[in-house]
Image (tube, rainbow, N blue to C red; front, side, top):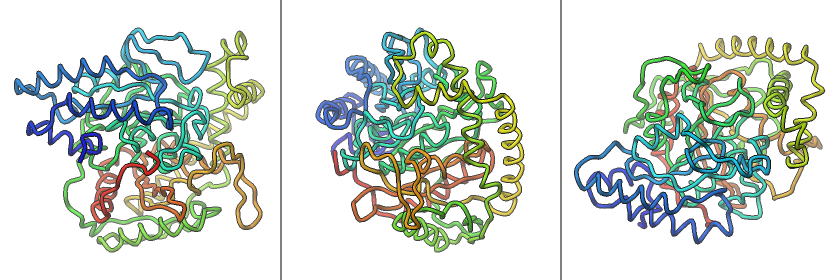
Length: 463
């Protein structure tokens, strides 16, 4: 197996036991970047020389017995919203074309201190305001969308041009591209991972989290990222938790909620079949399936947009008025729409979210996790704007992709997307696990138990 093919966990063990040098690993990944970037365009900026210097330093430290932890010498990508001192943070937008960060974001600083090596900044849908990342191509089929807004991060991990990457998630922007590219994506509990130094889309909905090849990898990255930072007003001050899932496959006693409504409505038949097979696998591992009713479903999307649109517009108010021509058309339309939203609608959305959190808490009193599709359809063709369901309903692609992921943003609940197969076109399908606040360890346990019963996943076929 070539170094770039290793999971983060496997690479970390190889470095720890001196069977692999960080230099070998980073060089392998950078060679992969050079070969694949013309086809995939996952990176907005590649920091190759910086990565090689960091890899040599990591190798010297490893040789001297000074490993900083499991991320020592591991190559990573960071979504181009996340500040790294001296490196461009463009948000994949002409608005930020000349912007260079003056200081590290909290998450970048923590990863750097852990010994992780920056390969580059990954593309986002402009300012994270979209679900397709149109400039980046799906890792399994370059004629299809990568998903967004963390499309570059998901594609880099799926293609082996990063061992792991960070994304942000406001309405599904980690989990959607994770599902569409066959990798694992975690949106942590709101406030668990600090956002200081990360460009905002919607402050009350934004989350930062990892994209990895395996569930086990997730725990290693989350352990570095999580922790209080007073510079983020929403940051939670809670004790550190060990979220490593362990080796056990037995889920006896665990209650898995299976939605009877909402999550399996207007869902592609192959997606539904794959997710239900995965749920059956959880039952075979000892879990007890419990049917649940998802609350307040008619208000989910209206509440999501009612919060996100005005908050995004407030963030962009100055540049929207001074240089509107620099925005892409789809993003500019949404930002301008935010200027027309009455304050009363925003306040009603806030009230709706409060009620939604309360109702979801009641549902989760009866189950430990909820299992559902991450997205209702696999990756659509690039440029496709709508999905037509068998009953004749026509839905915008962006609405379809955000529909099943938005509840976790509105409630702040943790949510993990795990690959559960492919459709007949060979495109990945994801299952979403939702849990209680600060319930990441339970999600990772369930995801890891499922993952261990499946054959090892290969890198994306388009790569």
